[in-house]
Length: 398
Image (cartoon, rainbow, N blue to C red; front, side, top):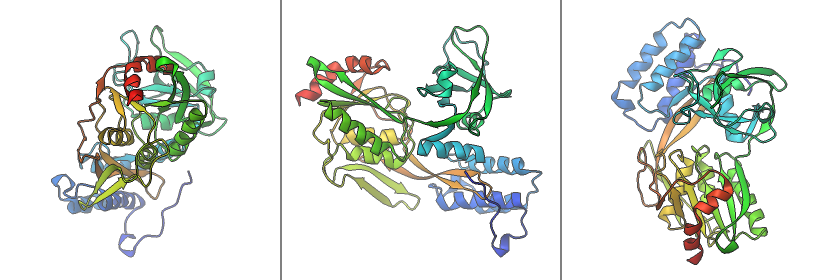
């Protein structure tokens, strides 16, 4: 992404240093957008006066102040992004990445007992893109990422780690990873290349009584998800699919409209999808415009504890409209919506701007959605279909 010099400022702000102005800009973006107008019960305007009077030694000191300011709002989703982190988020949202072809996630609950890693290791590879530099180098899902070019990633978020991995096309990087069953860390030398992350994958599987079932996995919602899903459904239907299983396990969300638009493919006209409540307590209703092309096709959704945000919008829309059966585990419970606001130097603030409710006006934030069928299914397509065979029989019979 292009970097921008500091733009012309209002006369009242000309006496501020670049760093002071950056902090004030971050405050202004949060002030304009944040959903909780009490600002966690603090004197929000007094805080600004304090921040713009501070002397910042360098840009990193200004960044730290912005982090602290946003942290004072008590919302874990409202946060600061460095320029490199903003680029990483933008790349995921559009699906275009210059890196090594992987997805990085938090290590919480993903490190096995026989994996020799540092106690504060925080990120793992969740997905390795087929044919990518990462796959060619022998990286695997579940590998714990310890260092990039000698820089320790301990204590970093997945976004921060991803920013370290991405770089110019053709440049090389040195990764240190730990793997279950390996006594010592592995070192991988990889050349970065353009990578298109496949957010939607699909396959045709045999269901009950040899019924053809379309299996669609959505890994993350992006600006192209609804189009990609529609294309997958069309192809699977042409091959004879009579029912569909959507796998939303591990899908932490992403682009909010993606979940809404995918839901529209399966719902009748005017069926509610979600209600969004903004900072002024005004409600916007999202509903189906017309009968979806697949409104009559039997459908199951696979969910788990990492199914969140846009994935929960899709899941709750299907459940509350009695359109699909949810199978799996209680979902994560993230019912707040963020916007990303870029700052003058290419960094950005992510701000929670609204809350959403399910079609039945249920607030699932920090609670999640309970599936109708509680069971853990294997990750592979064919095995997952076998796991839900009985549930598919019921769906096909209705």
